Amino acid sequence: MSVLPVSRMSERTVSGVLSLALLGVLAGLFFFSLSLGRVGGPLVDSLPWDFLYLDPDVFGETNRLILVEVRLPRTLLAVMTGLSLGLSGAVLQGLFRNPLADPGIIGTSSTASLGAVVVLYFSLAEYSNLALTAGGVAGALLGLVGLYILTGKKPGTTGFILAGVALSSLAVAMTSLALSLAPSPFATLEILFWMMGSVADRTFTHVWIALPLMITGWLLLLGAGRGVDALCLGEESATNLGFNVPNIRARIILGCALCVGAAVSVTGAIGFIGLVVPHILRPLVGFQPRALLVPAGIGGACLLLLADIAVRLMPPGPELKLGVLTALVGAPFFFWLLVRYRREML
Amino acid sequence: MIALETKGLSLRKKDKTLLDDVSVSVTAGKLVGLIGPNGAGKTTLLKTLSGLEKDYEGSVLFKGINLADWKPRSLARELAYLPQGHEVHWPITVAKMVELGRLPHGGFLRSLDEQDKVAIRKSISELSLEHLADQPFNRLSGGERARAALARVLATEARTILADEPVAALDPFHQLQVMTILRDLARKGYLVCTVLHDLPLAARYCDRLILMNRGKIVADGAPRNILNTENLGRVFDIVPFNTEVDGDFLSLPWSLCSSKQA
Image (cartoon, rainbow over all chains, first blue to last red; front, top):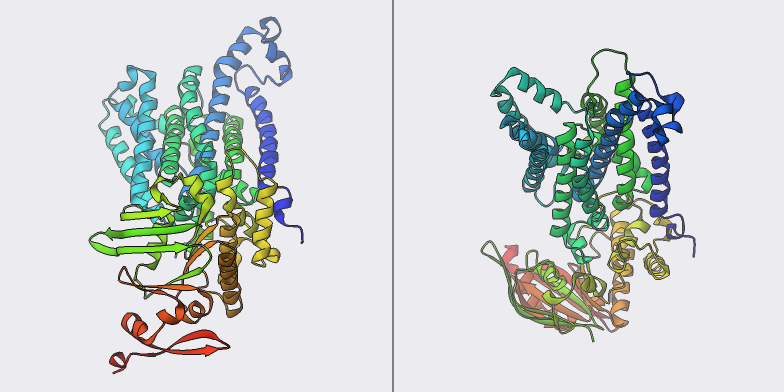
């Protein structure tokens, strides 16, 4: 009998090789990000060897502070957020069997934003740093449950986008309401800037708040890999293959809510990572949903970190917000995707 | 012997009765055909037997154990359901799609072992899909899709196969091929039950036909006892043309009942 693809390099192996390659890229970007900044000049000369020891005599106390207190949390948050968004996008696309599912497009980022804004509006964030994150996660969870109710069991692309638009519109309207009723113009401005999405000026407190939630979310999402593979064949066949579809769905929705909610509450809304990254990587892993998960996560981290580096490399002046940059690049990409899927949608 | 057995099975959805007091027993070794007009409840019965419909009254026993008491994974290794329509949502290759049939056998981090690979190769060659194994499923023709979907079901190595219209959209060659495979599986000791709309194929290949109408079983037996003028007139409003070809029973839908022709 002729050689069948099953005997060739499996998608799993491809996925592993791709993940390792992306990890290499991520490591490079990570060190570059640490070495990059306006204050104190580039640290490239002393990287990557001396800084590992953090010897104040060699490295200088100011440089150490800049590195550990400013650049490290910023870089870590970019990696964590990118990973969360890339992975969420890949899993949601598998669950909804729709290549346009992305936490931003389906309204989850907006509802998470709304949750966080509600917390800011009622000044609950003063009581605990966790309140903002709790608001973000609750908003994301409500948004995803709402989306599932609106789209039903067999979501078509059109119904899917419409549900996302409806949820986003509602969330944006409620957010605007909160903004216009905000007690002071300063508070309004602060909320607005936060909503644009950025990893600048964050501290390790943000990292420690988001990390446990994100790790829980990542584990939930990675655990759903076999389930999203089975869902290739539709919900009935997945059930017949021994999978508990409502259970998989609940785990994915909870996992995404934790990841995206935590990400949005510390960095604001950063869109399109979950759309772009899985789309680019999917053909490389033979379109298999499970094989896509890990590469999409690492790829998301690479892309978000790259975008943050790009923001910092721009000419001096007011720094462009990261969320604005990803939207400027991501939205045309989304248009292009829509044109490609137009035939299917009509 | 493998057996699926229902007692007093009824299923209602939104005040509509889909299955009405169905008591039937299907055993391995014979190819069983489910026939009846559109909306008779054939697909609903097949789904209930597969464990996909859960809100039923009465009982369904598979291998003597209540269907609801089966662990999903164990049931998936024993019983495979082939749905109508053959949906596959990503452009994965035929080989990859067939490989999904091995999911009930795999663990969380386990990759394919030799037994998996043998099962995948065997089911691909059984349906002569070798030349299409590298093709994306969604670029296949309707007939090729139907065969690939059946190959995916065979790859589970389940000994019970419940197929919903497996020959719809197939050309005559592949209709005969799929029916032959199903009959051979039944002869090998598999439990095979399939919904069919094609009466000549049902007459020629099935060992036993179950005729359904309005959620009830109205006749059950050998094809030549079921596809008679009286039954088909009552259920389908048609007159069959029945004959023998080399000792095999042949039944063709021939004309509408006189009352409808007027």
